Image (tube, rainbow, N blue to C red; front, side, top):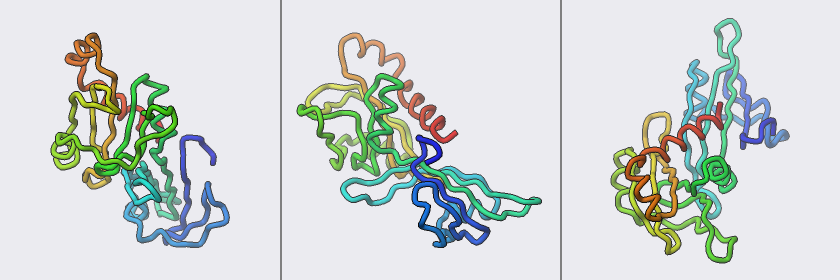
Length: 207
């Protein structure tokens, strides 16, 4: 791949037929004309969107962006690029912020920085049981923060919705910090901060 932050890069012609791929150079000629994001780019729009699809074990959550290729104002092709938000991605968030991070496809844990007592296993594939996440984040598309036990340890967790190009919430991102007396006092004041950090970090990954 040309950039380590990208998981895939595709170039199509004006009909949506694949001309080149960054991650699988031999797979060309197939059509992406049915892809909603590609169709918008073929109509001249620059669009970014979250996408969720079924994976082998857990949902695959990705951030995708498309831009039209123009010649004399005529669209002659499309560039589609994206990043899969996997364990390596959230590990990068933790390295940048010092906070634990997780991503859910709907309410199913798709990626997390937190590991079990063996120091290796990550509890991906489990469902989030926090009622506020379902009602506030996934259904209303709003941020939600509160205390929550993670692997039998109390944390302050801040969730934010991840939306597609039409504004529908498909996934959720979470940042958390272990609760102590000091962090509890501080987080009362800055409860919305972690969600802001996530959005900035994800935007920078696609810029």
